[in-house]
Image (cartoon, rainbow, N blue to C red):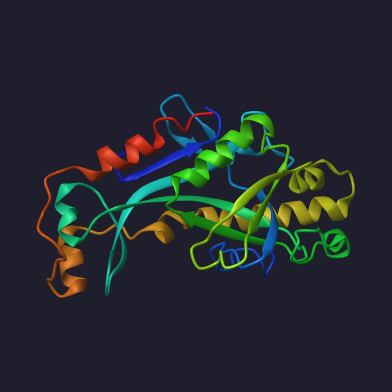
Length: 253
């Protein structure tokens, strides 16, 4: 686990829309979504990640670019919000839970996931959203799909069954072709302009994604904001080591 409490990982070893506050991706009952994984980065041998190196001077992606995720453990404390869990001393505020995050480009579709071609061609209807969840099984399923249908080359259809929205139940199906990559590869200036608007929005969301996952606070800051109350006695067991490490140890693709 990194010293700041976050663990970043990837699958593999001037516009008024840019910088807008992103919403979290949530599915609705009986609705399908076509998405592209849009957070790209380059991982160095020292396990550090460098988003800027994922892009060439012309704005295209470099061959070293890969899809990036972030993970942490967090505790929800009423009056404070989601707190970054940084060791046993934080267990006094509750049981830490896993959080996995990435950034999705959600394309304009109907409820069955069929692309709205006219909106797509006009560069309308897409939305860049954070996807925050704590479900390792979802990640494992996507990881398996990525081996056969690389998500740098293919999109993903995410479908929610009837009555599945409350608990964010989802199924995943690969979609042939990657719409963002098609825009980036196009020689048409309009397509390039749309792609660069999308990537600029992705970069803006990436700059705040850790803060959206959890607040990095000291014990004293938490007690001050919560009025000095803790939810449970201090637990000497390091939940981060047991839970997050076991969750992530097999995530290299």
